[in-house]
Length: 489
Image (cartoon, rainbow, N blue to C red; front, side):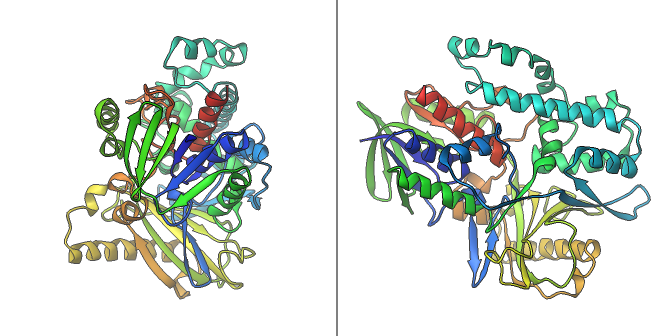
């Protein structure tokens, strides 16, 4: 009998499992895939390693989620803090392509953004955004019972350390456009395009619907962006090592097929085996849960899945190149002239491995991951010919954009070129409809109304990007921290 069984070995699941093992709980971690990572996993082609999805790390300062987790587990991943967080390549109002650095240093960024988009309102806007971001991080450090679901949870939020930051609460209900209007930026079309594409990759929404609080976190995160040597899975390997050293058990290729409640807790069916536990921590997306449960649990998860039935999916490209052209950063966001075919975004996010990261590519080469938003609808119910046709069209559109935006890219040879769609993510991660990125942050669905970590069922918790506090590696790590702190106390 395990104290807890954790479902899913991505950043959420491994964080929870490793912390519980460190704190003395008897745990088992079940993962359906052959390796760890979830949406932050990897694959290899000979000596080249490719990140499949998420490629940047943040939330690593001592008071932030990953910083707190790494410190408790006593692990030190190989990371590089980027002063040049990312390159923005976009079209100005004259339809000319311009390129600038999204600086990590705040003063440098305020100068850059004023130069690119005009000084009017920029400094006051960014000072406000950075202040909101600071307050949010302080709140997350002091409050691990969000969203409140009981009188005890509400009382836990009456600490002086939390009350003094109550000013950020209205920002959960106001769209980012309200700040643009406040600072005279609502008619600045170029800045609005920049902000919308940044918000889409960080909050899964645009300025009309992204709440001010979420927008502040999304727009400020490049100030603390880290490149993980070896790929996004490398810190997870260290977490797994800590987990095993502290007595944790892990099984790969064990896809959960059924969760049943019994007198002592729960029985989990996976890969023709059964496991008993007192409690469950599941990072399986909320949309998958109804088919794994029955009775009251199935009803509960079914209602949550129906209430939050929208999510983005991703189209991804993978390839390797020689180091034949210079790069200003490891990360580029490149705007297109219009929405990409069969996609829902006018930009792509491009991640290049660093020249000195020989764990990802041999000397003289780089691996590249490109991603953009799409809808699952665009890739479902297609015959094989149409599916391949669409993949080919989107692939060529993305490569054409890169040839225009990155000097020297047009002349380089692409090795191991491959593409992923929502169907790819569904196949490898088992996620419903290939959804990635979690539930979009929106004023239509307040952040505090997201599915909670604590379910109505005894010792049954949910973590990951489809429950509070939502999408992004720092957020899912925070969700895991909150659940483990709740259990431990």
